[in-house]
Image (cartoon, rainbow, N blue to C red; front, side, top):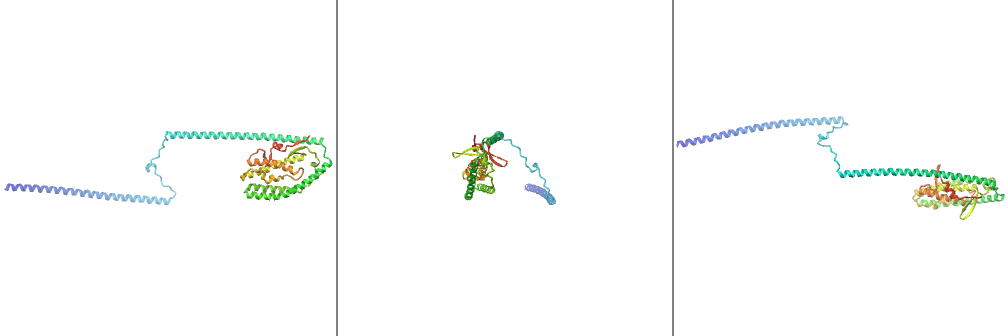
Length: 365
């Protein structure tokens, strides 16, 4: 019995020793955990202190930068390189083979277009040179034709002086009487032109043909100024060579033949050139008004008296040659070309070769 009791006491003692050892070990682990916790807490306090110091330092630097910006507003902030910004520079990407072929085709097309443009420019330059040479040759031919015409006229004048006597007194007086009748008829016709001019001017305004209206006003003013000068003309019929000089040319109009001398022929030439210039202006005006080709509707064409004083030739003959020139000048002006005439020293006149054809004067033998 005592042996059993002894064994129980030993067992209780062993259990107690084990409990003591376990409690001691737990206490030691708890102490070490608290030490670690305190160490971590201390470390966090230190890190927090450093963070606060860093934040304060950064805030100080930002404040310093802000102060520097205010002090130096023009100073640009430094730029970070692409490496520091974390951005890598773009690398060129080689185009695919199909893109390269398309690029080559575009280059080839541009080269062909450039070559074609150069060829066109050279062709245009060659054409202008050819036109210039043709114009030079035409002017030379016109000059030669005019010189020949003058030589013919001088020759005819010489023949007239040698072979054609002066008109008889009766014929001389008949010419003077005819001239006086022509003068009276001319001024009567001019008085009626005022109403025609007014009516046609109103029509132009209704049609909104501003350019033609402006040109017609200018023409009528020039015509009025010219006629005012003609009213003061005085002739000595006995001494004026036109009235006693025999005819040297023949011309045809409306199926009939008429005769005139050198002075009358010169006036017909002036009528054709005056008509050509006025027609050119009228054609330009209608083209600028986008109006149809209509030279017969022009007041100037119907009037046809610019440059005529009432002397030397009949008014209807002068009007005929003026309108022949006007029609051709209108054609050139409307289509912006120089088929029948040219501009020379600020005025337009018909080409001499065309002038000879239009006049169609036949020398009397």
